[in-house]
Amino acid sequence: MDGSHIQFCDRKSQVDLIQLQALFKLGAFWAKERSTDDLRIAIENSEPVISLWDGQKLIGFARATSDGIYRATIWDVVIHPDYRGAGLGSKLVETVLSHPRMNRVERVYLMTTHQQRFYEKIGFEPNSTTTMVLYNQPLGDSLPNQEMLFQESIRG
Ligand SMILES: CC(C)(COP(=O)(O)OP(=O)(O)OC[C@H]1O[C@@H](n2cnc3c(N)ncnc32)[C@H](O)[C@@H]1OP(=O)(O)O)[C@@H](O)C(=O)NCCC(=O)NCCS
Image 1 (tube, helix red, strand yellow):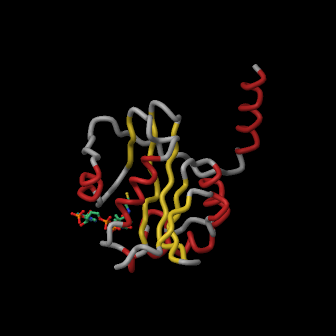
Image 2: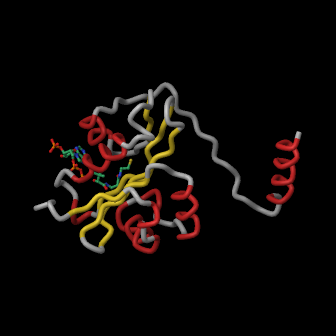
């Protein structure tokens, strides 16, 4: 595939949430049920957010969260199935890693179920020693109380 017309974009405002939702449904098994409202929140709170475009068509996406110096994590890396195998996925991850919020960070983490070999080619190593997870409870009726407690603890 001639990739010369594919454009990388780091502007969050550029991301079309409807197209992103469709891309996740098609190519990202962990993110098939995400709503556009929740995707907007995830994007607002991530930096960098990199999208890939073939003209007006969203064909790739990745985002990261970072403290800018010690730790960062890459999330939601996906290339549209029709565009895979042409080097775009590795270029996408490298674009995330070269962003100013990422390029000085001591350790960059990511979680992957099936794509270890893809990430190893970029330089990531398996890391079985540090991972734990808390499955947070779904937000329910108790949320206002929790928010009040949080505000009180901020006020001291
Ligand atoms: C993983 C993904 C982003 C790779 O994108 P891509 O554009 O096809 O990857 P590239 O063409 O840049 O591949 C780069 C290299 O990794 C290799 N590679 C890609 N996927 C691989 C896999 N699953 N296993 C082994 N090698 C793989 C390619 O052969 C290529 O090797 P080369 O440099 O020797 O030619 C894409 O397959 C995808 O979107 N998958 C579904 C979503 C997903 O699983 N994302 C990762 C979640 S953590």
